Amino acid sequence: MLLAIDVGNTNIVFALAQGQEIVHRWRIKTDPARTADEYAVWLHQLMQMEGVSREAVCEVIIASVVPQTLFNLRGLARRAFRAEPMVVGTPEVDPGIEIRLSNPAEAGADRVVNAVAARASHPGASIILDFGTATTFDVVSADGAYEGGVIAPGINLSMDALYRAAARLPRIAVEPPAEGLGVIGKGTVHAMQSGVFWGYVGLVEGLVGRIRAEIDNPATVIATGGLAPMFARHTRVIDHVDPDLTIRGLIEIHALNARGAAA
Image (cartoon, rainbow, N blue to C red; front, side, top):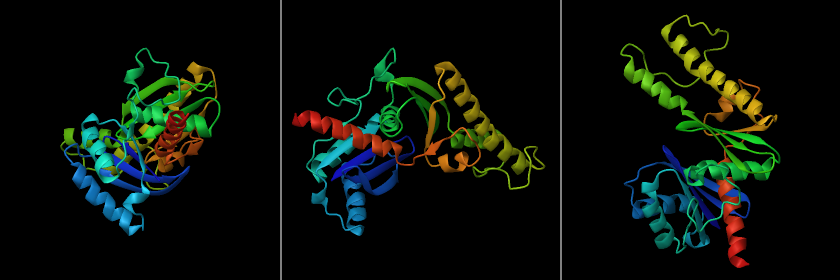
């Protein structure tokens, strides 16, 4: 069984996969100070609850946008599962996709992994929209290469900045205004909901339109991240929602490198 670990700026997702099937997934807050032992205790308890033994895990792959977490996650793999982990972004791991950046090392591991998963599931050009700490747009060309993308502040980050900087504005949830209410706010909360939610819908639609015009291709838009389903209900530019996109990309990269090692 494969343990795939996706380290984001806010959360870390641990997923167990049997072949191409994701059988379990768990989430924990990202904390660079968390030790390998702490990860092991937490993860083993969750595995026991699902009836999965530690010995069932024999391989580990990691993608991290927080480099400080790698030392302890490597320690978790080696000590708890006796496995040498594959780490996306290191020279030893082939992502299996051409990265068309002037400096390929600048490509975030999560963005490359998402591109690999998108290419595997949706042939042709695609735009991956990831609602995370940052809102990212990544482009896979029609011939299957990673072309680059766009990074914008995440919606929660923007809301938090608004709350902290404006003394009289309350903290609100990310959601559209109540059904029946228009865009023009009739109160502070309504006005903030319109600005934040419809503002981000406008950002998504505007950037997808500009990207499609630049690549001169309709391109399939695949959304991932916790807020993807909510936004997909309110715009027609999102074609598919895939909450497991990053994990599926890790599974693809692991399979590619495992085959290469066996050859």
